[in-house]
Image (cartoon, rainbow, N blue to C red; front, side, top):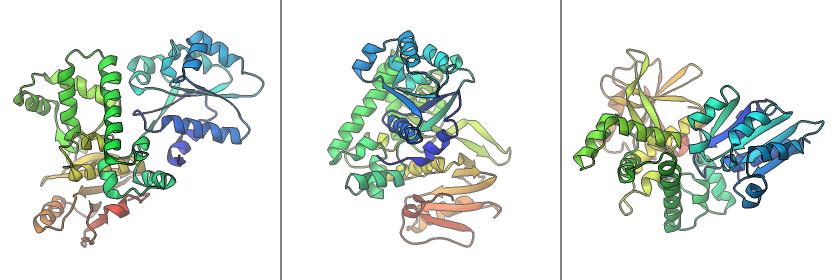
Length: 393
């Protein structure tokens, strides 16, 4: 497995902190691997470490509840600081109480778990101010390419736009095997994590809404527009229910919502937003046949890369038309338009005209999958294959 230094470096600052370090993110994005990489680094420095994997039945039988966990960890405490790593901690009865207690001992506590339980409002309220969380995401392209190289495989940009960056997906050889794995993962998250967690009664409605949102990534929505669409297709659902369902999907890191930014108000407008998939594979497994939505998946990939680079992202509300992204970091602002191709004259005019009326105080960028350079005197054109390896805009 590759070393995901960008995430580990953020966690490293808290190695000695008494705050509970929560490594969170969507299922199968590599949280457990990062937990083990942090432990390996600390062991390399001579630190005393204890690792427990509660996905393993023998571990759960031996340590079934909070009292047993506290007693077990206490047996390893000594004169030197103990670094404790608890994987899939939600499988321990009363695990939140155990975390509250263990952080008071001479140990540094790191945990991962099933996000729909681990990041529940109840848990964050229990730990109020006593934790720091680190969100892990599926591979961006450069990570996927590195891991594919370790596996002795090729992984083109086109492959990534379809199958995304879940690590285990890359391990599958054929497209049918990838799709089968991703469908199983989708089912685990939607059925096991969310429908069971929230005791959703109208499962068919929730699944219809989920399918619609995930196959419609990189579009502007409101809860009302989703309600209207579902009703036009014979599905009766209210606006409050849609808001609730979207909240469940966000909590499980299935979707990302990006708000609109108004330059006039210099603020975000929270009643309309663009919804994106955590990984473009959620769109592709819902595609009809091999008709993959490369255009919207490309925009989705650009968003994921911008977040990975550390930018705060919103959608820019220009008077002429909306610009896909406003990216800001350390006081620098960039306006970014995304298109699969601008080779066609109409597409060129449509995408570049989005910047009309905007002065040159901000850098204007267009990202496409084209090979030719379409930069102008005022707009920079980034080829997707180059953008995917950039550290900064």
